[in-house]
Length: 612
Ligand SMILES: Cc1cc2nc3c(=O)[nH]c(=O)nc-3n(C[C@H](O)[C@H](O)[C@H](O)COP(=O)(O)OP(=O)(O)OC[C@H]3O[C@@H](n4cnc5c(N)ncnc54)[C@H](O)[C@@H]3O)c2cc1C
Ligand SMILES: *[C@@H]1O[C@H](CO)[C@@H](O)[C@H](O)[C@H]1NC(C)=O
Ligand SMILES: *[C@@H]1O[C@H](CO)[C@@H](O)[C@H](O)[C@H]1NC(C)=O
Image 1: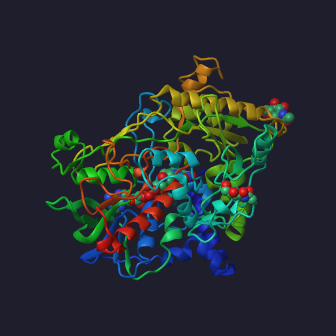
Image 2: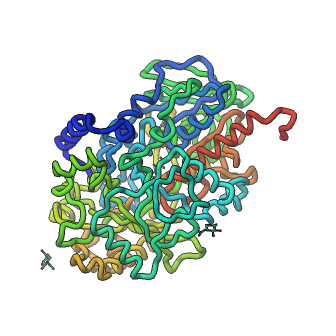
Image 3: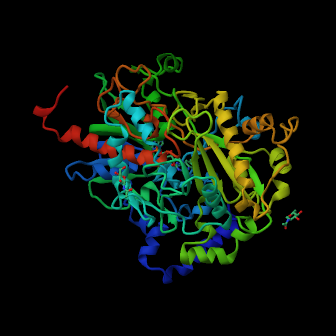
């Protein structure tokens, strides 16, 4: 949900005014305290042991853990700024897509998707801040399925089976949920807070009740079983956002230098193909900084791939066509996957049991959030609960469908931020959603879990300031649409159940312009609607694929070292070889934790015990 600018200023005032009555602990979780305490430095030293590029989920985790060795000097370079106090407020998440906390990337015009967006272009937000995308995301914490990681191991990635990675999930986690979760799956002493939102809309209770009526369990989807219904587990710290920077960078080790507004443009690689430093522009001053041990790219799925290609590591033909000297021919930029669902499954209700602009942007609610950190403003963008389910196409014990429950819909912010963030055309919005602005609604986003469509990132030119070509090729494989269609049918069934009928729930049936040739709610209508209003989950992965030496499409090895270049690793979502079930951020923290241990092992094993 977005927020009127006036309301935001007002909220700021409230938070400031009430600061006198809040204790420091509460203040800390607003981010005020933290942002004062993330120590950044204005200029770099000439040389470090490790240079980490990008302070997102992966990079922040890694910087924290590497700095545990007091003998190492570490530099963390981040293109964005420190996060601000508004990033802490969960409900207004889509507002940040309109600020410079977002890189503002957009897909190429799509053939099979984004048909309801302006010029067939879907925005693809990425965070640009200390904390990276975790400062603008929906905070949903799901680890994926056991089989996802067992599959990675099966592909030849030693050390990545579920048994192997579970300790790192636990290590990252500070679970603050008092339900009877199985302790052998959870950590309580990690850096990353995991909570339920302190407030739920009445209509979200109907979702869980319906799950129970349909015979499913209400469960901890990060525990032994995944199929069932649950309120969201969130990266939330007492009602405020817990970003990667809050979790991992709000401490003060003297051996870690953090520099913001630092845009790395190239990895420096010598004639023996060893990475020895980076080229970086810090507030428009150019530097070459040296790394004695390793350079680590944590710039995310789009920018790590881009930096590798700019540095001469990538597909030979593509780089040569741009005049880039090829140091290592590699499949960088291929294998780009994204989770896609459907935005338009909207239901109307008569009572005010869900979120609307009129009820949220009340003085009373802002006050409640400022004092209590509760109420509807504590719900991240309106997302409240989920179900992981099997469709008839499912082939193993992994759920192939997620239903994300939202206590509102595209109309619920009175057209302030959501529509523009998603790029939805005026024509579609005005026809379908304008008429129900300020009506109480709820929705379900059905999301295909292991999408088959995939795309590719290419450079547009050799100039680092130019955004790359993002050809996601969404919904190219009909399988993805069929899974989402099954999800729509499940959503319709859920809406018919007694807990929702209690509120007279009914489908919002204004057809999408462009699909009105099909009978409303027929299968073909929905297929058309999915192509018009896909929900991109911003779970970009795979462009720097991890795999064994025998895999020609692999760019990094199972220890995340770039093949063919020494002293260079990649630690972020780009290394994921296949898509995990659910949302991917928890998995990236796990990757950061695990990478730190692998790097420590490399550099602390006595030479006489090393094997090549
Ligand atoms: C709007 C949105 C909602 C999302 N919701 C969820 C959710 O609810 N749950 C979930 O699990 N996942 C969610 N995600 C996805 C998740 O947040 C990301 O996948 C994850 O944060 C990515 O981590 P990363 O370390 O790979 O990259 P990032 O966190 O994106 O970090 C990359 C960092 O590198 C910096 N950088 C890039 N290029 C350079 C350069 N050249 N020089 C210096 N620095 C550079 C960037 O500014 C950024 O800070 C969402 C994402 C978005 C955008
Ligand atoms: C917790 O999970 C472990 C491992 O799956 C299992 O052995 C144990 O019985 C579970 N404990 C409870 C209380 O369910
Ligand atoms: C709910 O609202 C609709 C449309 O305004 C109206 O037709 C209907 O009678 C209402 N139903 C109930 C149960 O109040």
